[in-house]
Length: 179
Image (cartoon, rainbow, N blue to C red):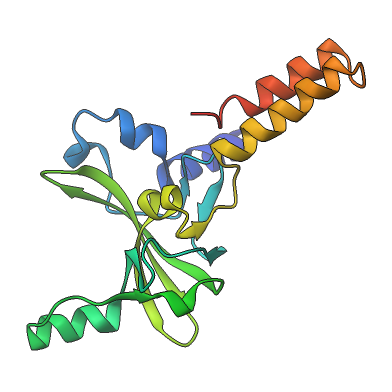
């Protein structure tokens, strides 16, 4: 029992959730700088070492919420603009190396992930912005996908292919994702 409790405490100290960040009134004091895992708005837990896939960039040329560490260093040293990750990287897998909660006076707290992209190296991702814009393919369920599944379950209920209890269970499972 003690081992289970200490494991739970260790997990809770190294994991941060979207809801915790969203509901924080004082993010400067509420969060550590780095975490081992993050429970995102899509309900999935993303942990250091996990992989996910880059989706479709916000513009035709680049991902708006991802920057190459090499390009950032070059911009700082050369004084030029920061280059974002190019559209050609869509569909590639990245591996999470670090998860941080960063604070900004204007935006409040946000999750940023340092990831590794084979062929490009380190990239920084504003995670929730990238997830919500489709720049990354989330591992959890999107609001649209959950709504689509719920409508399908409703059709099945109307056609008497499932029971009211089965529909209610599916609705309860999916409503956490629907925004």
